[in-house]
Length: 116
Length: 117
Image 1 (cartoon, rainbow over the protein chains, first blue to last red):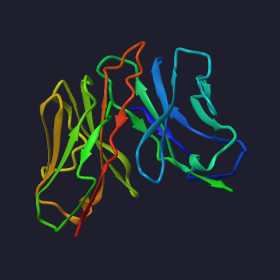
Image 2 (image 1 turned 45 degrees about the vertical axis):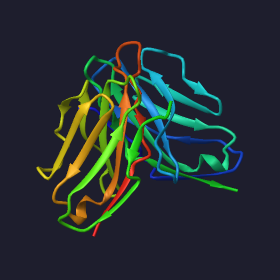
Image 3 (image 1 turned 90 degrees about the vertical axis):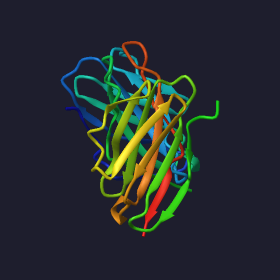
């Protein structure tokens, strides 16, 4: 079974600075998807960014980018120019690409605080 | 699109009472998921449906929990009888089928915060 590990329960960053959240996973599969979800105090789960394992290029969405290291099974999230609205819990998640494997496996989350 | 809709947003009930949580998935999505989130256990998948059929209910904690999906636009999660340890935030999510070239990302509803006294 796949596992997802987020080793940083809490992180903080000064507004406008850059922060990196870590995520590692364990799988024997070669094809899969990885996601970062954001959960602000409103508790709504919002998809931030996705990465296909078969793509070597790291995904980018505006100020959010990932560093995907397939061999190391690492999938970190970099937030540039941090804003107060980025304060939230961030969850890393894994999904197999196989048909019928629709489950997401979530990490335990990292709480990000933005310091004004 | 209105996104995934859940009701109620908040529910406070007394131990032993029946609780019904409701979910309307995004139109056209063929998968529906029920999750429970607590501080102690994090985000847990309870059950998921494909085309209204339950596929995996291994996460349902016990017989007090049941879920149905009578049609493509509606699902319920019922707890009977409820207990204080059922207090949590319950999320519903929906997705299109994933595969080699489609990520199958899940879209979450706003959640229902359940408090059982």
